[in-house]
Amino acid sequence: MASGTIAFESHHDHNQCIEQAMDEARSLCKARNQRLTPIRELVLKLVWQSHKPLGAYEILPALAEAGFNSAPPTVYRALDFLQEQGLVHRIALLNAFIGCPHPGKSHHGCFLICRHCNTAVEADSRDAEALISQQASKLGFTTEQQSIEVLGCCPNCREHAEE
Amino acid sequence: MASGTIAFESHHDHNQCIEQAMDEARSLCKARNQRLTPIRELVLKLVWQSHKPLGAYEILPALAEAGFNSAPPTVYRALDFLQEQGLVHRIALLNAFIGCPHPGKSHHGCFLICRHCNTAVEADSRDAEALISQQASKLGFTTEQQSIEVLGCCPNCREHAEE
DNA sequence: TTTTGATTTGTTATAGTATAACGGAACATT
DNA sequence: AATGTTCCGTTATACTATAACAAATCAAAA
Image (tube, rainbow over the protein chains, first blue to last red):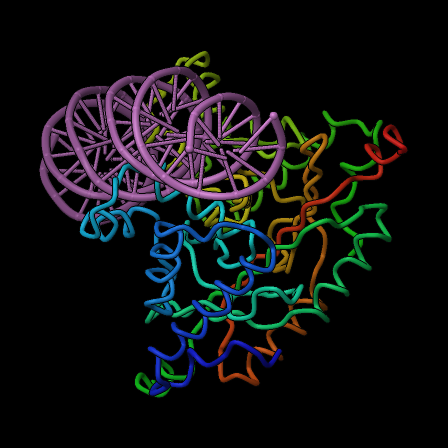
């Protein structure tokens, strides 16, 4: 559990965050012969523009501003594509989407979601997932996909709200 | 990870399952001075009637049949109460609800959800949760609540669908 | 270069999930 | 019986997501 935690560092250069993510996305799609169309690219950028998970309907107005059609299917299609490519994840507890900080690498991530500032961070959960799969297999259950979502308080909010 | 796995045993006496759950619920509420009203009791029973997580809107018709009002708030209120009492859990990946097999005991459960038959089982995940909390705390994140949901294939479906 | 087939997008409609708000009924005391 | 609290009925609406089909775009073959 060590990657993708930059969001908890208050003063990082978020523009660079975004640019790096966009670059990775472009080269990944190119390598896979997938089309990162203008809509998809814009949606990805919007998702990356905050470290807080974004609801689909929060994305729509920005699409409209950019001159695209902005009915729900537009954004959901883009999000579906981005999820298939591993570029964004959906957080079930929030019905919201967040950029993946290390697409490409097959990974096992859990989300640490701050109840106060809504920031969400993807942390590696390889060990925990292995443990769960192993225990599940003792019950005869074969694991295919895991969703680990953690609610709590991030270091910044803890600091500012010492009780 | 050893409790609540009875749902994977094909031929258990499910009526007894239900009756035991209802008895536990009644005594728990009594002990806590909480009112397990007819609506709440019926909703709990309906949720228990299948080992498959039940959507709120699947519960409504049965409420109507039983002569109760059956607008959404009715069932959501009952479900909210039952969740607060730890009698049912919500599975975020499915927007659905399932009875808790061991209410009262503070517990740390994950859900093993079969993609084929939709059966969901609550399994103990104390160790995995401890591991996650511990890793999260290294990032300065304080865990308050965890949601671990696993999709896969249950032993019955694996048996019947040997590939 | 035109044709062809596949993919992507626009558009309208609708399905599915959940809550707000307020008044009235039932309950548990005083 | 009076009172305050909790619960329920009711209407309306918000939020999340997908179905279905036509039009446009793209990408490779003819």
